[in-house]
Amino acid sequence: MVYASIVIYKNSFDDLRATLISLFEAKVIAKVILIDNDESNWARNFIHEKIIYINSGKNLGFGAGHNIAIRGYGNECDFFLICNPDIRFDQREFEKLIMFAESRSEGLFLPKIVYENGENQYGARLLPTPFNLFIRRFSRGYAEKLDREYLLKDFSLSKPIFAPYLHGCFMLFRSEALITLGGFDERFFMYMEDVDISRRCADNFGNIYYPFAQVVHAHEQGSYKNPILLKAHLKSAWQYFWKWGWCYDSGRRRMNSRCFEQLK
Image (cartoon, rainbow, N blue to C red; front, side, top):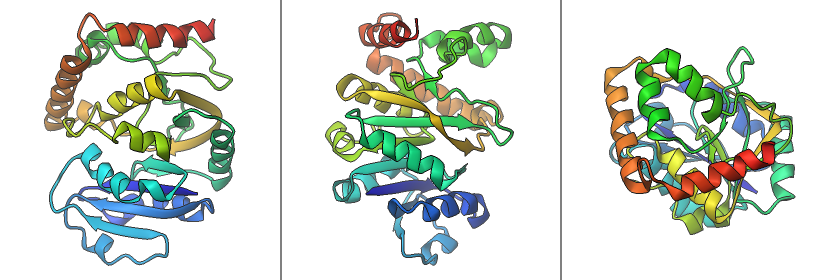
């Protein structure tokens, strides 16, 4: 059994229509928990047998919002899906992911993530260095070189692999692992919380990227366009590296090396 949670903030019903349809059509998903970080009348009044609506009372941020759902319902299901409000998928693709996850013991699984046009978003990644997150924001030419390695672009990824960072738009956790991890680190208001929880799960339970199932993510990269979101992204990156290490991060080196070794 799978429960899914979505955190919304000033999202319209049209923003979520495709995502909700996908989640409702997936037979294995029993409940969809909507965490409302604002006051969305449509969400409060939306009725569906799978929907659980929770108003958080204020804008808690991405991770803290999902934590409400995890603490409240994580122990009622076998798998817990962290889902963005801009996702759509065919239920047969999700069933493939679930069947694979049920055959494994790792704690976190991610399918192939693509744009609307089918272009790969490279959801399986290394743990970032400060250069990956700061330099790539301000030097496009150099960023492309960094991304070849960081996003594993030079590898075909034609089989399931261990990756220390799995993109946060569609994270399928084994519920027991997610609860043991304590959910997201709420010090990250938005951005970097997925990197943080990915590396903690990778280190304690293992992460697997599964390329034989895919979902569509209408990713807008808001921090590249909005100066307020850019500031929030940089702040979270600063917090992340103070937590795990800037130039010296033995865990990053160890897990990134493990990822590279299997790709040789």
